[in-house]
Amino acid sequence: MADTFPKRSHTCGELRAPDVGKTVTLNGWVHGRRDLGGLIFVDLRDRYGITQVVFSPERNAGAYETAKAIRSEFVLAVTGIVEHRPHGGVNTEMPTGEVDVKATGLAILNKAETTPFVIENEVEANEDLRLKYRYLDLRRPSLQNNLLLRHRAYQVTRAFFDANGFVEVETPVLMKSTPEGARDYLVPSRIHKGKFYALPQSPQTYKQILMVAGFDRYFQIVKCFRDEDLRADRQPEFTQIDVEMSFVEEKEVLAMTEALMAELFKKLLHVDITLPFPRLSYAQAMERFGSDKPDTRFGMELKECSGVLAQSEFKVFRDTIAGGGIVAGCAVPGQADMTRSQIDALTAEAKTLGAGGLMYLRMRQAGIESPIAKFLSEAELKGIAERLEAKPGDLCLLVAGPWARALTVLGTLRLGLGTKLGLIDDSRWDLLWVTDFPLLEFSEEDQRYVAVHHPFTSPNPEDLPLLESDPGKVRARAYDLVLNGSEIAGGSIRIANSEMQSRIFALLGIGPAEAKAKFGFMLDAFRYGAPPHGGIAFGFDRIMMLLARQKSIRDVIAFPKTANATSLMDDAPSGVDDKQLKELHLKIDH
Image (cartoon, rainbow, N blue to C red; front, side, top):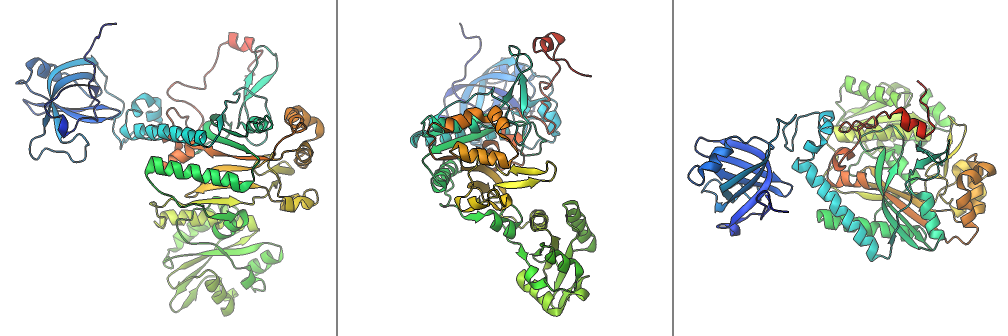
């Protein structure tokens, strides 16, 4: 096939001072155009960068006349000679800013209509408009850089696991529906009338089967699907780095995870992170930070004050503690003068989160001021201040209630205030493990126990005597990796024998018949020599969002869905015709 246009010799981000004097050809999009009357300047852009091209009638009158017609986002082929920019014209903010290309030839490869928004990093268009024209949004250098970072992360991950003896195995996308947690996306079968496949929420069962099959070390960068309500860091389809290992306990899985994270930070950001990562138990994380994914980049740690207030004359505190609850609080540095309306807003938020109310103490040089001070003794006020390590000028916040609720409310307020008051050091990368999660939690809605992680998580051997008598106190051999207050990975040591798996199913209200129907293949596999095994799954999109310092995972995914799970660009999901429905034995009930 003959060439139909001048092909590029260099990219738009490649030319530097040593290239001066060369005749080059660039292909790209018009990023900007300035007509100074006798000279036309065009910034030509591709994914590699931007080069300034200068058109003048002295160089080539024909090219200059053609350049008068070009507009933003036209696609060009430009031939010219690389020259130094004149004195005072060097752009130090552009890698190519020392040089210009003086055009000697120009071909307009394609024209462009006026775009719905300007193609620039700090775009003012709303997100829905950008998602509708995602192919234009993806021309923005900032988004392209995010996807290039993601590409490099893929390569680093694959190289790391290959070097450590892992085998990459693709698992099925059409699988059996085993709903436990989020809703499955279902796919009707045309061949098997009335039956459905499910899109995998994770490859959990398959990767455990691969351990039974003897593959020893498995990984996969895999698409997963969950039909759930969305937010900034959730999508209906998302990407995991999925990992499983045989003949391991927690320390081996955690060490391998830390090594991968060190590799990603080093190769992608040129940052050295300290190993091993700090570890907190679930109870410690909740008691200190009010969250099982704590942000440790700032202080304001929570402290329980129940010991100081157990005999208090203040009825709310006394009755809460007597009923098995707690009183906990935190000191907000330098905020003793927070206005009453601001405190009222915090109180309203606390109530929305489930608290009965929010109590506060203003720490003054002359003493402690509080609406509840008259109900508390001097010793109790002093004890609260000492417990919260409050200093003059601080504001103390207190919540009374059940252990988990009180701490969660305070943890949410802590994080909000930390952000609002600028207490969070955004330059830090704080990685830590949270371990010893509860194995099960009681669902008031379903009136049964549900798995905190998933039903294949092994219980802590020390807690096995409590499994049937007090299931809520059984700890799981589970672990989450947290980065700057976001959970980026979670895993566990798995159950490796059918007897223990059946006991867990029973606690979850899954009887033998249901267990066989849903997981019979897995229970059968365990009967034929399953090795001890464990693993972890990384939320790849969330990791990339954090490493790229973005606020939403939609900015690190090429074609994301909106918050209501739609694709504005191609109008998915969409209706299908009656013929397709009939082939799938489906009828829509209007």
